[in-house]
Image 1 (cartoon, helix red, strand yellow):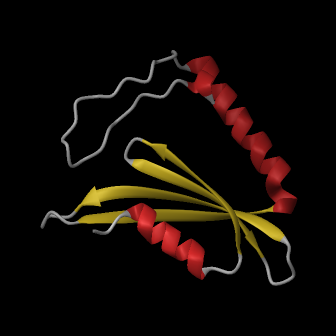
Image 2 (image 1 turned 90 degrees about the horizontal axis):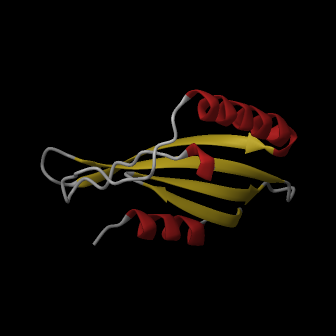
Length: 117
């Protein structure tokens, strides 16, 4: 049986440039934070969002979006992320993480408590 985790594990085994990986499940999405090495042994980060979808014929497919983040940009990226998270925390009410009603084939939808970030 195909699974996103098996596909991802296979990719890690095949890629000689993979150094470290941290998957984070979040409802219907999984985020992969992957440290990779260049041929010169310089590290960079890829962040992949993978979302499971159901095709009309019932098959599952994974829609993926990826960004590459290089170490010279880490501080600016982290600063920008922290700024927008604080903006959201200040302007949105805190909502507890509560699963919504869902179809068993769809995965869960969750509200996010930004105080947990």
